[in-house]
Structures are given as structure tokens and as C-alpha cells.
Length: 177
Image 1: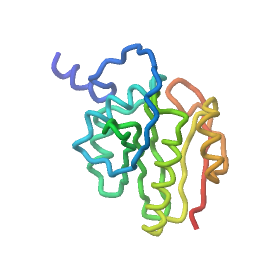
Image 2: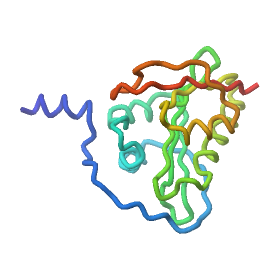
Image 3: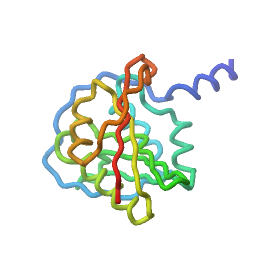
């Protein structure tokens, strides 16, 4: 039974997903700061709240993202110290980067948090000499597509059945030079 439990933990979170009523957070300002392994539990909980459709990462995926040296990670922090968002980007040896995930707490959405983190990431990538950033976004996630388009990303391809639930994604790319 312990083996089965271990295998399950590789593919799911240990934190149960509960229904919640979203109440907008009080108006506040946000700061983008480095995200480290000490924030892992908080990121895992926020990840489950951000991605209710089952495409949330497991604790093992976050362990990988926190421990690999070629990954940048940042968090958006509200004035009260609460984590309002997170972002992870993998740096590739070929001078490109892959935005793997970006999430904003439901109560902090539509306040520019994702845009602030995205701008911060892009500036850090430019400093590191990265020339191109790529990402995948659900075809149905028009809100995210609008954000990326506003930041200069272009859709280059539709990938069929990319997500576990069978939904397609768009591959989007931006030149940073």
C-alpha cells in the first residue's frame, strides 16, 4: 500500500482541492521578488487555486523547478506579504527560454500582476542574453492569450490535444532582441 501511495503522490498533489468563494482582495500594490524552495508549500497551494482544471503541477514538478540551476522563478507579493502570483521559466542552452507556468491568485486577478511578473521575467532574460521566449496557452484561455499578445507574443502553431483533458494549445513566441 505504501508503494501505491508513493506512486499516486508523483501524479497528484497531497493538498486537496476545495471549492472556494472568491472575494477580491483589497486594492494593494505588488512587488516581484525571487521565488525559492522555501516557498514550495505556498506555491503548491496557490497553484491548485490557480489551475482548477487539472493542469496544476505536482510537488515533484515544483521540486524539480526549484532545484534545477537553469530555471528562473519569481513571485508577486502583495503589501500584506501574501503571495499573489508565481512564474517559472526554463533557460535553454540554445539561447531560448520556456515560460512553463504563470499563475495569479483568483482574488488578485485583473490587476496587472501577471503582466508585472512577465515584464520582470523578460527583463531578467534579456540581461542573461536570452533571445527568444516561448510558451503554450490553452486555446480556450482567451484572457491569457490577450495578455501575451499585448506583451508582443505571436501565435505560431496550434498543437492538438496538448493538455491531459484533450484541449489544444497555442504555441506563442516572442523575440527579446
